[in-house]
Image (cartoon, rainbow, N blue to C red):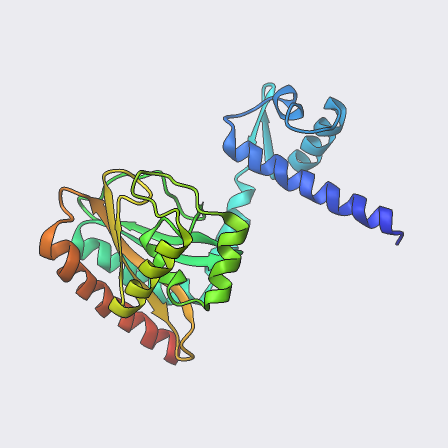
Length: 255
């Protein structure tokens, strides 16, 4: 295949995925609204949408478009294909029930954190996060728990690619400060997120380390600052999470 043809195929694929991303970001946009985001004609964007609609990945409602539920098939397959999901999901759900808070399982992929499982306890707060959502690693307790156990060169690669944007006034945006914090996380065995990503929300997170001393993901419990204080925030929840993580790590080793 000629080099320019190959380049065109890659560009077409990237355009397709960008359209899908925009359908997630925007609320049921029209062809005209989507065309404004690309250096392509309205008819070209319409052709992309028609193809995606025909294959079930997009639904047209009036003049607007939205993601089709067929996307759940791909997401669900990817989720269940992760060994750590099968091993950890029941433990994370039990953690939420016992603490009454929001419990999470996060893995790293392409330098971002991906929520693989979430469970809501009786008093769990509502947040903007959802299964499959991508988040930065530098501004979450879960992400810090993972970064602390990655090789230093890999952490630099992640920060070079994705940056360190601030989402609250408590977000660490200085690289040296972050590395000092990661050293502390590694030494303690857990990460504390004190409103680093969401104002008013605190989080305790611990890594999941396999038998080869590689980090496979992290689990956490999140809640409002009003309930995450004192010994509960800095001692009891870290100890509980470390206990749950130990069970998950053993199950990963012997499954």
